[in-house]
Image (cartoon, rainbow, N blue to C red; front, side, top):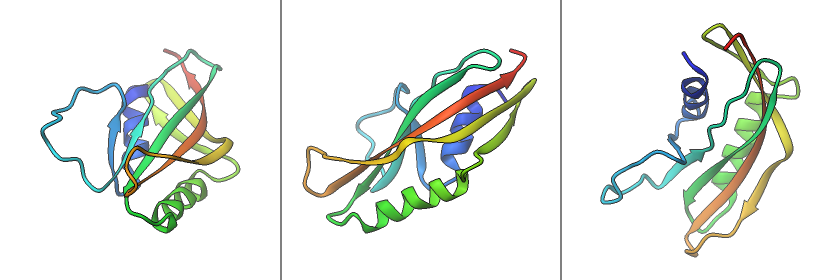
Length: 124
Protein backbone atom coordinates (compact mmCIF):
# COMPACT_ATOMS: atom_id res chain seq x y z
CA UNK A 1 0.00 0.00 0.00
CA UNK A 2 1.45 3.37 -0.94
CA UNK A 3 1.25 6.58 1.12
CA UNK A 4 -1.90 7.96 -0.56
CA UNK A 5 -3.67 4.61 -0.25
CA UNK A 6 -2.81 4.47 3.45
CA UNK A 7 -4.30 7.93 4.02
CA UNK A 8 -7.47 6.89 2.18
CA UNK A 9 -7.74 3.70 4.24
CA UNK A 10 -7.23 5.69 7.44
CA UNK A 11 -9.99 8.22 6.69
CA UNK A 12 -12.30 5.47 5.40
CA UNK A 13 -12.06 3.60 8.70
CA UNK A 14 -14.56 5.86 10.50
CA UNK A 15 -17.79 4.59 8.87
CA UNK A 16 -17.98 7.57 6.53
CA UNK A 17 -17.46 7.91 2.79
CA UNK A 18 -13.94 9.36 2.44
CA UNK A 19 -13.16 11.53 -0.59
CA UNK A 20 -9.75 12.85 -1.61
CA UNK A 21 -10.24 16.62 -2.00
CA UNK A 22 -8.50 16.53 -5.38
CA UNK A 23 -10.42 13.56 -6.78
CA UNK A 24 -12.68 14.05 -9.71
CA UNK A 25 -16.19 12.85 -8.97
CA UNK A 26 -19.50 13.05 -10.75
CA UNK A 27 -21.26 16.15 -9.42
CA UNK A 28 -24.61 14.81 -10.61
CA UNK A 29 -24.40 12.07 -7.95
CA UNK A 30 -25.72 13.08 -4.56
CA UNK A 31 -23.19 12.87 -1.75
CA UNK A 32 -24.26 11.09 1.41
CA UNK A 33 -25.56 13.22 4.28
CA UNK A 34 -22.36 12.61 6.26
CA UNK A 35 -18.91 12.27 4.70
CA UNK A 36 -15.29 13.29 5.03
CA UNK A 37 -12.96 15.01 2.59
CA UNK A 38 -9.24 14.81 3.14
CA UNK A 39 -5.99 16.25 1.85
CA UNK A 40 -3.17 14.14 0.41
CA UNK A 41 0.44 15.26 0.59
CA UNK A 42 3.43 13.01 1.00
CA UNK A 43 7.06 13.48 2.01
CA UNK A 44 10.38 11.69 2.29
CA UNK A 45 11.80 9.68 5.17
CA UNK A 46 11.67 11.51 8.48
CA UNK A 47 9.68 14.47 7.15
CA UNK A 48 6.51 15.65 8.84
CA UNK A 49 3.54 17.12 6.96
CA UNK A 50 0.52 18.99 8.37
CA UNK A 51 -2.70 17.74 6.75
CA UNK A 52 -6.38 18.57 7.11
CA UNK A 53 -9.65 16.74 6.64
CA UNK A 54 -13.21 18.05 6.84
CA UNK A 55 -16.17 16.28 8.38
CA UNK A 56 -19.43 17.24 6.62
CA UNK A 57 -22.79 16.49 8.26
CA UNK A 58 -26.23 17.41 7.01
CA UNK A 59 -27.76 18.59 10.29
CA UNK A 60 -28.74 21.67 12.24
CA UNK A 61 -27.05 20.27 15.36
CA UNK A 62 -23.36 20.03 16.21
CA UNK A 63 -23.85 16.94 18.42
CA UNK A 64 -23.26 14.06 15.96
CA UNK A 65 -20.40 15.70 14.06
CA UNK A 66 -18.64 16.65 17.30
CA UNK A 67 -19.02 13.07 18.53
CA UNK A 68 -17.39 11.82 15.29
CA UNK A 69 -14.48 14.28 15.68
CA UNK A 70 -14.01 13.06 19.26
CA UNK A 71 -14.08 9.43 18.06
CA UNK A 72 -11.32 10.15 15.53
CA UNK A 73 -9.22 11.99 18.14
CA UNK A 74 -9.59 9.07 20.54
CA UNK A 75 -8.58 6.60 17.81
CA UNK A 76 -5.42 8.58 16.99
CA UNK A 77 -4.68 9.07 20.70
CA UNK A 78 -1.91 11.07 22.36
CA UNK A 79 0.81 8.77 21.03
CA UNK A 80 -0.51 8.78 17.49
CA UNK A 81 -1.34 5.90 15.18
CA UNK A 82 1.32 4.06 13.16
CA UNK A 83 0.16 2.50 9.89
CA UNK A 84 2.18 0.17 7.64
CA UNK A 85 2.89 1.17 4.05
CA UNK A 86 5.17 -0.17 1.34
CA UNK A 87 8.74 -0.04 2.64
CA UNK A 88 7.88 1.52 5.99
CA UNK A 89 5.22 3.31 8.01
CA UNK A 90 3.32 6.54 8.40
CA UNK A 91 2.79 7.98 11.87
CA UNK A 92 -0.41 10.01 12.25
CA UNK A 93 -0.58 12.40 15.21
CA UNK A 94 -3.10 14.94 16.48
CA UNK A 95 -2.54 18.43 15.11
CA UNK A 96 -3.10 21.67 17.00
CA UNK A 97 -5.87 22.60 17.16
CA UNK A 98 -7.21 19.16 16.32
CA UNK A 99 -10.81 20.14 15.57
CA UNK A 100 -12.29 23.47 14.52
CA UNK A 101 -15.91 24.25 13.71
CA UNK A 102 -16.37 26.06 10.40
CA UNK A 103 -19.30 27.82 8.82
CA UNK A 104 -20.90 26.41 5.69
CA UNK A 105 -22.92 28.06 2.93
CA UNK A 106 -26.11 26.26 3.96
CA UNK A 107 -27.75 26.47 7.39
CA UNK A 108 -28.34 22.71 7.53
CA UNK A 109 -24.67 21.75 6.94
CA UNK A 110 -22.15 21.37 9.76
CA UNK A 111 -18.41 21.21 9.07
CA UNK A 112 -15.47 20.48 11.36
CA UNK A 113 -11.91 20.77 10.07
CA UNK A 114 -9.48 18.25 11.56
CA UNK A 115 -5.72 18.87 11.72
CA UNK A 116 -3.22 16.03 11.80
CA UNK A 117 0.53 15.74 11.49
CA UNK A 118 1.94 12.83 9.50
CA UNK A 119 5.52 11.59 9.73
CA UNK A 120 6.69 9.51 6.79
CA UNK A 121 8.96 6.69 7.93
CA UNK A 122 9.58 4.88 4.65
CA UNK A 123 12.38 4.21 2.22
CA UNK A 124 10.50 5.76 -0.71
